Structures are given as C-alpha cells and as structure tokens.
Amino acid sequence: MQSAAAAWRFAAAAGVLAFCLALPGVGARSTYGAQTSVDEPQYLMTALSLAEDFDLDVSDEIEEEAYLSFHEIPLNTQTTPVDEAGRRFSPHDPLLPLILAPAMSVGGWVGARLFLTAIAAAVASLTCWVAIRRFAVEPVVALLVTTAFAGAQPLAPYATQVYPEMPAALAVITAVALLAGPRTARATIGVVMAIVALPWLAVKYVPVAAVLALWLFSGLRGDRRQLIGTVAALAVSGVVYAVVHQRIYGGWTVYAAGDHFAETGELSVVGTSPNYLGRSRRLVGLLVDRRFGLIPWQPLWLLAPIAVARFARQSSASRWTVAAVAAGYLTATFVALTMHGWWSPGRQLVVIVPLLVIAVSRLISDTRGLLMPAVLLGAAGVVNWLWLAVEANTDRRTLVVDFADTAALPYRLVRPAFPDQLAGSGLSLMWMWLVLLAASMLTASRSSGTTGET
Image 1 (cartoon, helix red, strand yellow):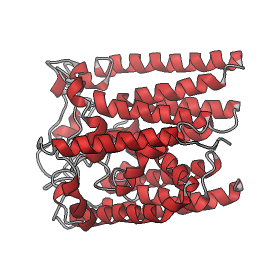
Image 2: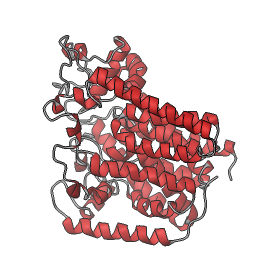
Image 3: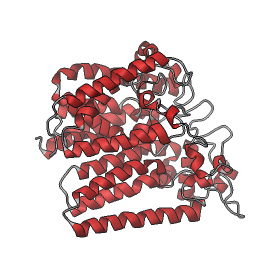
C-alpha cells in the first residue's frame, strides 16, 4: 500500500501531463468558419449571460450577436421564446455555464476552455489517486495508463470542448473516491453533492447518479439516522430540480425550452420512434465503429472489456464501480439519440471513462506482461490525438466535421479493420468484433481475481 504522500505525487504528475496533452485542443476549431460549434456556443452564451446579467436569459446575447467572437457564422439558436417578454433559455442544463461564468467573464471562450482543461487535469489526477489508494494499482502503472487515456479520445478533446462531460466525469470519480474509502459523515456529504451535481450538468447522467446513490445507501444500512437524512436530502434535491425546471424551462427537463422539441415534446430528445433493437448495435459500435468508436482512436481501449469483466469479480467497491460503468454505457447505447453526432468520438461515455481507466490500470497492474504492450498501444492513441489537434489548429481538419479524415498514421493504419456503421458497411467486421470482445470478457470473468478494496 503506497503512502498518501507518494500517491499524491503520482497523481499530481498525471494531472500535469493531462493538462499539457489537452492544451493543444484549446485553439482547435470545432468546425470550419467557427471556433466553437453545435452546443458549445449555447453553453458559452449562457455563461456570458450569467457573468454579465446574472440570469439565464440569452435573448439579448442572441440579438446583440454576442457569440461572434467564438462562433463567426450564423448561429442555430436552438431556443424558442418562453413568454411574452421574449425570454429565451438555452435547452441545456445550467450548471456548466454557472461553473464557466467567471472564466468566461475574465478570459472569454479561451478562458472557458482553459478552465475546462484544468478540470480535465483534476480528473486525471484524482483517477490516478483512486487507482492507487482505493484499488491497489501500482503507482507507475496508474500514472502511465491514466496519462495514455487522458491524452487520447475521448478525454483529450472533451478537456477543451465546451460540454458538461468533463465536469460530470469529475463528479463521478469524486464520488467513487469517497464511496470506496472510509465511511464518514463528511464523505457522505461529498457523495451527495456529487450525485446532486450530475443532473444539473445534464439529465442524461441520472442513471449513473442513481447507481452512485444506491452504493451510498448500501453503505449506510447500519446507520439508520444517516440513511434517512441522506435519502431525504436527495429527495429534496430532486423536488428542487423539478420545480426549477418547470418554472424556468416549462417542463421536466431543459429540452422543453428547445425549438427542436416544440412540436414533438421534450421527451423526443431520445427520438420520436426509438428503435431500441437497432440501437443495440452500439453495444459494440461505441468501441469499434470506424469513426466514432474508441478503439480505432486509442487502441488501449482493447483492454477495457477484459478489464471490466475481471474487475467485477475483485471487490465490493469494484462491483459497484462496474455497475456505474454499465449504467453509463447502457445510457449511451439505448437512450442517446445517436452515436454518430456532430461531436468528437466517445462523448456519451466520458462520464464513466475514469472508472474504465481504473479497471484497465488494475488489469495491467495484476498482469505485468501487459505493461509494455499497453504503453505502445497507449502511445499510438496519444499520437492520434496530437496529430488531429495540430490539424485542427491549422485549418486542415476540425474536431467535429471531418476528424475521421485525419492523416494521423496510427489511426489510418488500423481503420480498415473496423466497421463503418454510419455508412452501413462492415457488417461482418462488426460480428467479428462482437464475438472477439464477448469471448474475451467471458474468459476474463472466469479467471480468478484478487481483492483490491482498501
């Protein structure tokens, strides 16, 4: 067991490396003709409104074209007036703009992206620490694996792209750090705060938050008073969430204020006629899709299914961690409207990526013969990200529109081995990967695991 001081030294190194690797994304263009794109301007406009007007109404920002400094082309406002006064609220939960408001006020969109980069560094640092102190991963392994994942898809681009993914990942890894450690009243308060924060970042994080809440309740069964107080606190926070959304956005979610859902209703954010059988292809596609899968961009993800299957057998904390991973993965599979969107690959999985990093770290720590192959695979993913980031800073590629056309050599070498689900091709490749991944997980689940709970 490493000392706390030693663990924090490795964690600090992971944070510094993550910050440096993510930094090229600050100036990278999301799309041609606009520094930021899709939902990024919405979050930035709301942050600007909070900083200058102390409210969420973005109607004046839209009218005055306050977005031109970070979105130089005509803006898709995504909003509809909610009252006779013409107030408009961006259909995105308000916690991220609230977090970014001070940085936006001081440094504009660059300041906001730099602040997100600092959050990404905190995620990497805490992930490394949790792996060492809570799951008995060797420090060098934790540092190397955390850095490899932090410097590649999906963590690297979302360290700077203005989405709630990275703050949500920080909330989740914070909760796990506390849940897997000593049970104290202070730790319980911290976990409750992390759980409450997740829906305010995006309602799509509710399933992961629910698993974390169940984990918390399971540890409080011997303290009836604290359990009742915790349940009451979360119930009150749920009521506050519902009331605020009804009063401001006119519905149970922020989507009620969006022009895309004016006719079909806020629940159509998951699709008007969802084909859940068809969406099941994402179970494999989220990892192996040629453009939006994670393995082609960071080959180290090859170890994730094996690591999760093995991790689930190792301790109570690891099983709860895998349950949170499953909640996030199934949400990305069956609830998200699409896997192929106007965003960098892996967006819907960022919230659970730190937990997957811990599982992979533990696998490599227990199987030292994997360390060198893992380093080589991880390095290929880092090269892919840095190559793409340079291209996106020099107008040859962007992070949203044509990232899959990158000249990054490791990615281009392996992409023919993966199915292109967006184009509807490579069905045989998809089945091959399904069999391969399923077989590897089955084999790993039958292998003996050791207890890493501390």
